[in-house]
Length: 356
Image 1 (cartoon, rainbow, N blue to C red):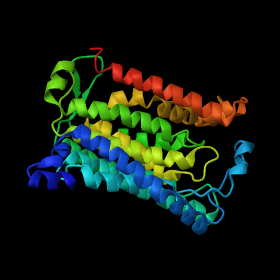
Image 2 (image 1 turned 30 degrees about the horizontal axis):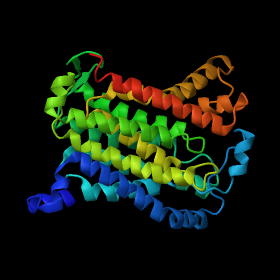
Image 3 (image 1 turned 90 degrees about the vertical axis):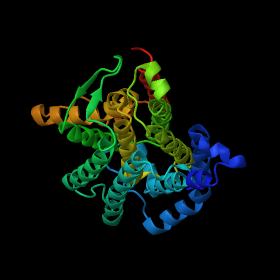
């Protein structure tokens, strides 16, 4: 909105700053942060009144989690509202990549909202059926993939190699949808401890803000030997709003959490990261930068597969963060060490830009 206004006024005076994506990214981050901090207290009070008993806590989980009964969920709504309002202010409203990512964020957030609401209504940890969720998620992801491919191509690029890509043709639509849905559900599985999911999301968003900016610049793309995607630089602003809204949420989610993000937030943020990776043609790099989420998802898949085949467990409990809790690690130790892992993986992901 401000970008179109500044363009109409020929970037006169201070509006000249709006011309630059870096300036808009910084402003968008601070705006999302301020909106989140302002609406947070009232929003949490409203959730507490509406939900009563808050998010149901599993009886078979770590016993320390039973003390969290009564904590409201659906805090992800605060994240989605903050980043959406900030985006509408600072993004170029004509950019299809941003709208594709917004569609995934809002769509996945709505799916998560319905799931959270069903859990609260039934006072059960079982919400909308898994099959229904996945079906709708794939539908939203396919629409986003179509919007992205309509502007770019169907090539998957391999990191560490200059301009090395594998053309997938029509199969790319399924691959893109899988990346988006997989990212959403991986973040969802990670969201089991106070602050565990949101900080790695912020770290990944910061990493992809830089990647999106570089991919959107023809000069930097040529120098680094990475795919150039015209218009993808606007996604740096999208990533900045995720960081700002995420930091605001972390303020209230810091232990002991005043609110949980719920599936509303985790599906929305994970889906957004997946859509950004698809739009910037850095899908493989997302698996590195978001390696923590991949590890969490794999721990569940391995646990379920092995238990069904042998009746035995590989981990004491899945997802993997609960395994370390069962080993005697405190919740804060698990969270902080997982944050460290996320930072290291982000640095490895960034190294793919130059090591070619």
